[in-house]
Amino acid sequence: MESLTFVLFGSTGDLAKRKIFPALYNLYLEQKLPRTLSIIGLGRNKFSDDEFQQYVENSLNTFSRRKPEDHASVAEFISYFRYYGLDAADKEGYKELLKLVESREKELNIPQNRLFYLSVAPEFFDVIALNIKESGLGNTKGWKRLIIEKPFGHDLKSARELNEKLSKSFEEDEIFRIDHYLGKPMVQNLETLVAANPFLKALWNNQYIANIQITASETVGVEERAGYYDGTGAIRDMFQNHMLQMLLMTAMHLPTPITPQNIRNQKSSLMKSIRRIAKEDVAKHVVRAQYTAGKMNGKPVVGYREEPGVDPSSMTDTFIAARLWIEDFFWREVPFYIRTGKRMAEKCTKIVVEFKDPLQDLQGSKAAPNLLTIQINPNEKITLQLNGKNLLKNGEMESINMDFSPASDNIPEAYELLIHDAIRGDASFFAHWEEVEQAWELVQPILDAFEENLVPLETYPAGSYGPEASDRLLAEQGFKWWQDE
Ligand code: BG6
Image 1 (cartoon, helix red, strand yellow):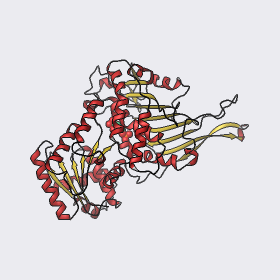
Image 2: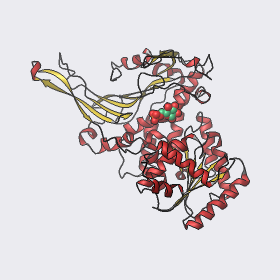
Image 3: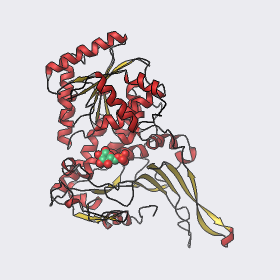
Image 4: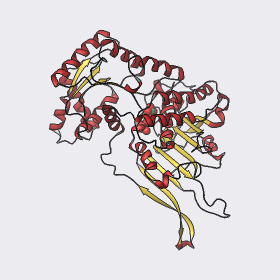
């Protein structure tokens, strides 16, 4: 693997401390980093290199798989780090940064491969990208890459503007947009599960599948993020990105040969096949809701509008459910139900595939539908519900569950997998601009309908599974949400 310089903007922020340093360290322990590496942390704080290295070590002690005896490996790992205090808008600062990057490249005798990770608020993305270009930092004799994380814009227009600006400094194949759901091991497992198992591959279509349900429920409320969340809502925070990406990964038929480009094309064509919902029809297919006061683990909690920092008359959705249709050869007529919300009964991300009932035409059939449940978070598990006869009960039909849980120790974290891919230049599990743009195209009429109050804002008590209206969405086709209660 080629050596590189990892330039981390926002290195004294929360994400760096909790996710990025531990991910890099775990990769280092597993020998998945190049043998020589230069990591340059940037931020507004004043740190000496020693202080910064100590800061990185502290984060490893709290958030990584470090064992107390790992002194030597930690010491070597933190020796890769240097710190430079930079204000993102200070053009002169970037020239100094370039000198530091170049001097480390010479000292370590490594090629000019530079990975810029922007772990900063999105309003800085374009300024930083431009300064990277104008300072000459992006003018390398090796490769350059940019990692950014959602939100990519606030709506279709702002997303396009942002992309336009970024594309002045980086080519599309140099931009790695992280959607951390694409880094979750079980999401990454989806394509293999279907492609490598003929019995699933053969059934992965509208002939056998009745509906697909994708849930990401959270127990946390808005926490300290009201400033961000109140103008964002579940639709922008989860639906436009994580939920639609999970839908694509579930519906995808793996292209051959499996290359990042083919995966991108496949996802993009799937995204194009999702039936667009006209603004006037949004209320028929989308449910939005907000949590009211309720109980979590027996303890009373306040409603969304009473949360600190939230506008008491806020119309922000903390829950969204939608019924989507993919108009292609494989999925025509199969409803995809999606729901996500805060302050729900359980923390759970899962995909349930409900198969059609083969005995549905036989009178008196008691067969339950076959269900394939892919539990993504918090416990990774795959369950297959089948039907069998219980000979102890007069041969009555009953459900049989087959479970598989992968070993849970040392499963790499999403950031570990994604950073490793970005270092290797593999964009398979990153969001391509076309997908992002099409996701906004799909979401924009929904945002407009919310804005114009064409969709009622339902409520649900904290600690529940969401509003009744979300059950009605499925009941209209004779289905129900499958959940472990
Ligand atoms: C983030 C959202 O992208 O994903 C948060 O901004 C949400 O609001 C989080 O809580 C959920 O991620 P996970 O991995 O805990 O399911």
